Length: 97
Image (cartoon, rainbow, N blue to C red; front, top):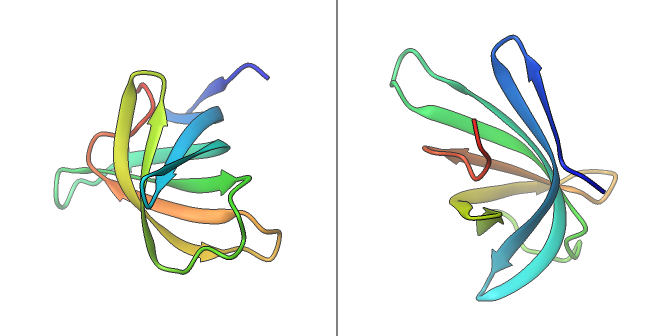
């Protein structure tokens, strides 16, 4: 499946393949991520969903997301009722803006 980048009000949405590293183990996943520049702190805040991770991952959990040659550290915050994981991060996102 080819990744999609859809502009929406100057916000990029990345929906496609990624790698999620948990405890030095890489997992092939799909992510849907977006973010915004916060005018108060001047930093980029990104968030979204990680699909295809095991549901027994303990929360909250640090995660390293890689998409192509870009990567970023984030935090898994919860398992949704559908079995996906919510992720948040601050700073340069793991997808191209």
